[in-house]
Image (cartoon, rainbow, N blue to C red; front, side, top):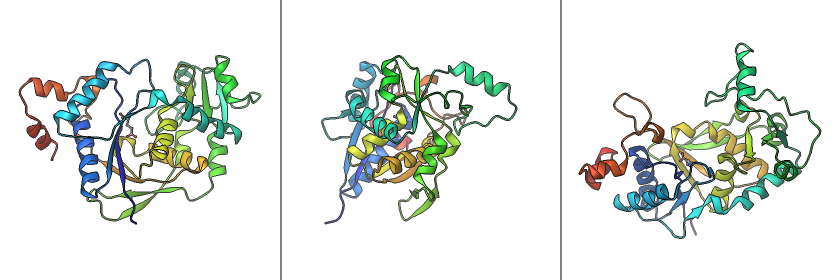
Length: 286
Ligand code: GLU
């Protein structure tokens, strides 16, 4: 029997959806439909300081207005911290995690005083490793005792994962794929959990895609470099490798990426202004 493919759209309910989300959701929905696959909606609400129930309600309403339909029940990341803790525990068993008490401002200060200090693909200075050599303690203990964050020892992790880490990147038209070499070390010792959010986006997304049997990760090209890190975590945790496909981002009139934080045109704003769902679909090419 041939595989039934599983696609997902995974918004964070910390703002209203905009045209970029409409494009990503429609693309996943249509790709699933075209191959008789499944389409999942996942609410990525691990950031409890920013996630709001009214934004989640708006996600359902806006997607239904666009004509989308998804499997129920919907997975909420906030209900699955135990799954992410299990994944972290496994990394900890491999000796790959350490506690870190540095503040973001300490890291910025350090980077500012070191000319050409390397930055990650998102532009943040790499962690200088200040806490890496502290005596090792168990990850659970560190978080329970008020430690600020858990970091991945990237050099160790990359060495353990071995050579030839890559992913299959499918083209825009979906035909064929190219093998993209993964370069997780460009992220340095990333934070995988914090005291206030006990799982990072990276660990949660990798665990969820595996637990939900996601076969196709189709998302904006702004997450392209994060895939290197996701492949590393998949290899270390012995999780299956999905197909990846990055899509272009919908830009505003000034050529900037749309962002909830900048108040880019939201789907509900367009709807309230009298724009129909069919027009929104056309605006993003569906
Ligand atoms: N939750 C992420 C976002 O809203 C998307 C994650 C993903 O597709 O991997 O940007």
